[in-house]
Image (tube, rainbow, N blue to C red):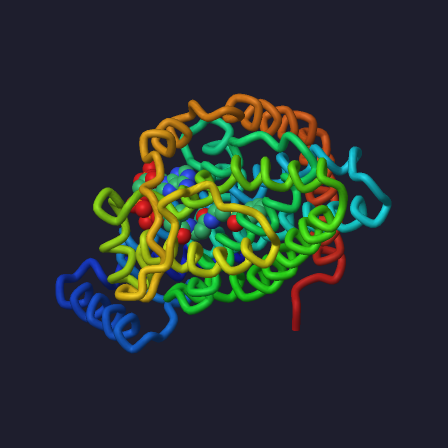
Length: 342
Ligand code: BYC
């Protein structure tokens, strides 16, 4: 039995017991207690169907974002201005592939099938983060993605290291360590450009102007329009609301922008002593909606590239499948020769 089959089997037994009314109530009460004590739900534990579905949705969307997220920066690997920058960028993009893979594995512990998740992405039935539908027009974009996008990812994902589902929370620990390194490499790249020529400083400011608003939108719709936040927070799948994390990101980024010497493109941005936070303008939520619905500047290009990569990889999947079948036949032959055990 594969790991997924073992998990499905365990879930099947738990669900079977749950079918009797008292059994179900007892399992639900145990689940609620585990959540309220800030303890972890593990793959073999009983869980409400909605909890499983929400996790699969969020984890798959996150995994797809990491994989599609390789594209905007990946486009600059062959055009990096030095061997050092090329090596750094290569490593970062490779880390993102790794994050996607841990996350698909975490989704598999919930009984999801990775090939099916990929199909859903390719057919446009599952989402990925809006941020990756914007173009990378100059090399400063690579730095700004590290600073803003990985910075936003850190704000959003560090709390997820304490989320209620064990495999997701554990995957997040390593991902966050790597994201934090990514953010610093982005900031260091921008620092270097800011110490360069006037043209380089302008490239940085231009990238900041283009990525600021999309980065704020990464945190999702405002709380008043977020369909999942209340339930996801009750389940401790999310630990903070979209607006709380957006605010945290703004507060973290303002002093960094000052130190770097760039202007964040929001005339309303200022410290509010009473709130103890920065005030900022409302992002254009109709733009977020458009991009999520498939009409951003690069949606079609990102999906076409992802589909092409999947098709180009068909022979690898076929070869791996044939090799696995051959190994299984070989193992079965060996067992037959050894005869019945004991
Ligand atoms: N883009 O009820 P809400 C990275 C959807 S990877 C697209 O607030 P939720 C990185 C949402 O799915 C970054 N769709 O949802 C990689 C829902 O639609 P459905 C990815 C969005 O789930 C490479 C609907 O809008 N990070 O960091 O409670 C290089 C209503 O929203 C977006 C993660 O995935 C969006 N921006 O909260 C560098 C982190 N926002 O599914 C960096 C984990 C919302 O009902 N995910 N939607 O059709 C989360 O924390 C949450 O899923 C979100 C959204 C905060 C993103």
